[in-house]
Image (cartoon, rainbow, N blue to C red):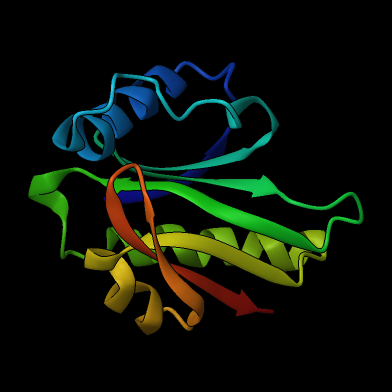
Length: 144
């Protein structure tokens, strides 16, 4: 059974989250391990756990001092687990958390390969596509 948990960077499972992001997000595009951890300390972290193993993760970074806007970042699901609804579980938990915190807008920089996924979760594309870390991305947002 898969459970979704919110953890801090002091949690024992945080290291597993970091390793998952390295394997799924960074190494395949040639970025060094831990290259996108600059916001980790200030972010909320959500992980998907199955039989004690972290198989998915996503971070939510606050963007404004009022607490109304946040950015979904570093979404990753183990390659063998993709397509099984784990990403949807993570996003649903993240959005429920946003509602309890009064966050009204969630943005993300979606890799082109993930745009369809985010559209299915209710996000919309805004602005023009752009390149980030050498990959085409779209600006996406969801109003709560």
